[in-house]
Image 1 (spheres, rainbow, N blue to C red):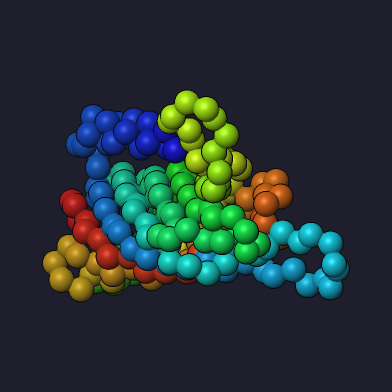
Image 2: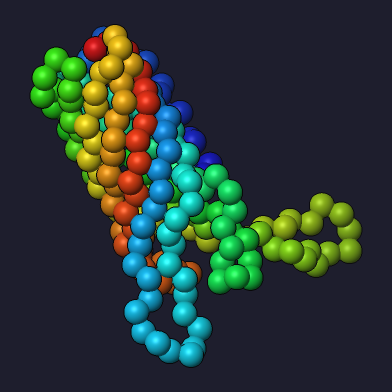
Length: 196
């Protein structure tokens, strides 16, 4: 999480430093849900659960240089704790940085393609802390490398304000806590474009 924030800060400084080259800066917030496959075998042994369901608030920014290319970054987390295999509370946090390609289709409609890398941090909340002196941490996290691809369509409904339905695919490497490393996120965002 600290690395993502540091990278976001560095990209923001770079954006401000090269402001004369900027064509457009989009800021957006939204909500989505995630879908992944369920286990399909009927074994009595331990099966990792599927990472699916829940509401995932998101925040993103996209910076487009003169021409159709730029970059974007996004942060997505589950709004409430999930229950892992009926036993332990957890919360996934997805963050990524992407190369972006944008295309204006009509005056009020645009589309974006993005591909990049990021990480999936799973925060597991423990019910019991083992320490004799206060300030005991009650969580453990596990971070996995992630490949991201996404597509969205922007509709400018009022001046520079837009609504954006979006689809994101994540390939989470070595995701042994869950049944599948393939994750699909479907949602929508509302945002504002500067310099459009």
